[in-house]
Image (tube, rainbow, N blue to C red; front, side, top):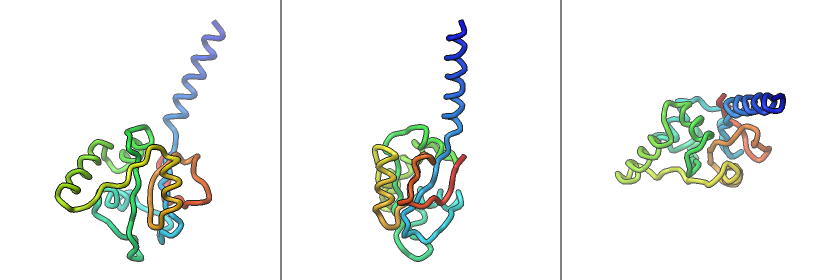
Length: 139
């Protein structure tokens, strides 16, 4: 019985920790901004804002699959992953823009953002390294 309670408590703690995971909005070190507002992030991922403050091209990167990190990221500006994908498809079909490049994992996003001037993406906050800069942390 004690072992059962231990596993139950451990499961609750792990679930709570997962629910509290933070998402870091990361950018290539060439990006002139040191922070970003949710509204600007929404403009970037909605394909309305295409350049940084210095005129350089914004290269947004996203996850191909829907997962907790994507959900938390897009929830921050009131959209679901599916709603964003529909918006990107519509923009592509009307010639208004190309969808963000999709990566298979947040590790791939981290590598892509680190190696691509102007890139912006999102990863679990605990995966951030010195090769990128954090513009925002989503709780």
